[in-house]
Image (cartoon, rainbow, N blue to C red; front, top):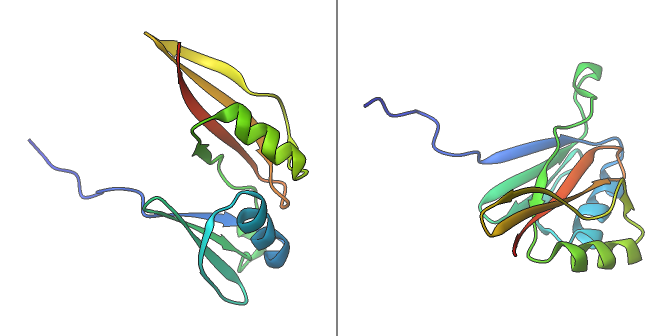
Length: 125
């Protein structure tokens, strides 16, 4: 059996237009733990995965990021709390799949840099 060289995803990069604005959003609104930041980058800890916000070095890198699905314990509580912090949601929490006694719920939102991300939660039914 062949083993893969890739062990896990260690870091995800998200391009931003305004680092200070994005830093405030991810730290203050989403509550992520800031590891450190420089003039052009900020790094957050996400349970063993590093999230890097960065100003694009070239125009060709100034595009929206991939959708990041943040796992939360209670999607409805997270949604209500962040609506109160003026996070812009695209929809409301909703079930997207059911496997046995578990439903996967999601809600999509925009960050301050116009990237689309989501919160997801697995609910026992």
